[in-house]
Length: 408
Image (cartoon, rainbow, N blue to C red):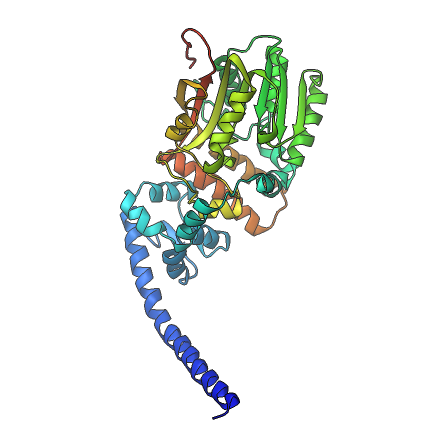
């Protein structure tokens, strides 16, 4: 038999197998979909979510997708309008978050998540060459977009609502800024390094109210532009200096170091270096404060695939244990403060403001973007409400004598 005939026969056999496999999969698809639907419907009941009462399904194919791709599929199918919540979305997502851990693992399981976890152990997703990805993807949407629904100080992090109503976000953000200043024991004339300066709100506030000199660094071009413009408008350009710089390259010594909502972009593989930079840049006797979302368990890789894909590429949420562990032999942990429930309130005000600007036409984005953003804000709020994630402020010192007096 010629090689050509052999090849043709082999191709025919393989083609027949492929066609047969496709036919089997096609025949099995309705059965698999029905089984997935029964599983998901029963799992939702465990969370006190009833199809038809609390949630409406527009596309039954999502049941099988949910079982295969977990939370990534749940978020994407919401963006695509394959399902709607008949109760407030944050309430429905909170019910899901409150499921027992074994039930959540069954509902949110995803082979994709296992692959990402494995890859995260091998690759450094937050390496210097990839550091600018989150800035370009998330923060460089445009300063005008964020100005619409953030507070006047442009604080894109958890506010502090102590003694305030849930709706008083602007005051709560000022509360947070004063709280951080008091924890750092700021004094006029001090030098402060801010790692991850955002739009400059914290540094400008410190310069205006506490008379300190602030050096802020960022890897977002839009945030850098906004910080410099705002410092000029507020008349504190002489007290503030904003620079595009990866934290790993930072040098110099400062009386204080502060880092707000930055650690989540550092990654497990880089946490040791992150704390080494704080130690290197902090003068003897100095104080540092790190404000970060925290996980209830210590892991080495990210697992929130929807957030990673659509909101914060390369993000990683550390645990409070890791925030202390990586400071060992470098800094002394002086104070640990959990204000996680206040992030639920913060996110819900952000969502309300976002929705108002959508209705008024001030935000003109695609329907998919709008549903992505409202899902993001309320999904995160649900996590803090269910206490599956926290927000910790940790104060560290370097060769500081005497007792540190905690501030609340």
